[in-house]
Amino acid sequence: MNILRLDHTASLLAEMLTFKQPADAVLSAYFREHKKLGRQDRHEIAETAFAALRHYQKISAALRRPYAQPKKAALAALVLGRSVNISSLKDMIDDEETEFLSRLKARKQEFSDGLNTAAELPEWLVAQLKKHHGDDEILRFGRSISQPAPLDLRVNTLKAKRDKVLAALQDEGLRAEATPFSPWGIRLRDKTAINHHRLFSDGTLEVQDEGSQLLALLVGAKRGEIVVDFCAGAGGKTLAVGAQMANKGRIYAFDIAEKRLANLKPRMTRAGLTNIHPERISSEHDPRTGRLKGKADRVLVDAPCSGLGTLRRNPDLKYRQSPETVAKLLEQQASILAAAAELVKPQGRLVYATCSILPEENELQVERFLAGHPDFTLLDCAELLKQTKVDLDTGKYLRLDSAAHQTDGFFAAVMQRKDAV
Picture (cartoon, one colour):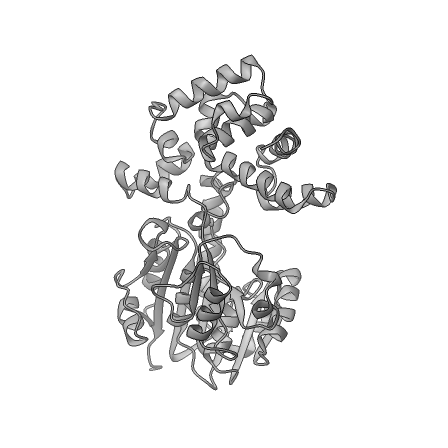
């Protein structure tokens, strides 16, 4: 770290730590405004800023209103999150800042400000988790999401086999390994600009967390079927399902955001997929979905959620969500799930998923749906994965967490519509 990078990190944190905007959006806007920053400068600034987000509970316990003291927040992130020695910063800090960092480092091992500080989770989230988990589990979760995520890739089986792609990446000197569960996945241990790689450019590789790949396996789409991705977003799961169908059949990719669907179109082209039909809908009740009522073989609902399973990648989310935002999401999820269920044909499959770790968004939401929809029955995710030769048993629901599985936190339930009477 040098004084230029430190000053830029402080300027960035002055805005980022207000939590008014997503951290990645603040970062992108800042780098657009400072085009002269080199690649290594950008890397160091971003790493330190995200370290501040990951260690915000400890920083805010020692520093009042961190966004108003952004240089100290940046220095704290270097010491707490990046293990920088205080002595190496001596040319950039004054006596008062040196004393602050010394106190912070001495306090690091003994923070007695409560479970929220030890687990690096805000008080509202600790209270929510305590309804279902003990302190040790909460602490384990908090520590697991304080580590940066690896980079997971999915091999497009329309274009290549995983073994050959993996060998090619390893030959280039990349620390690449097969993901333990997904048959399509490759995990990179180092941050790599994969979007400039030839295998990404030609559609052989897509960036996709292993948990998300397993979700596509649970959809279980077959050639020639009608599939609906009800909340398609930018289409990562849509692409995985399309490859699974060998480009045969028809996938309807619905979303309310035109911009997200626009991002899907070039990805489809790159992947060589022609069986995907993106369509913007105004809401889950858009009459345009009516033509598919009772006709879809598979319907995937990757529901809008708190995103609390993705905190390794988006550590600011825990400060931008609240009990109030979660309560609104619960009603939205229930409405979307009920609307999507109408499209499933008899013996068809309905898959509900979130990237949340809250039971209210997950198991309890599914139980609520099943209580009101006796024409659906719950299938066993572990058994379905076993049928695809994936050795992963988290029970009847798919429950992935960062500590146990090295994936994002994912939840999925698979339901089947009973035969029409």
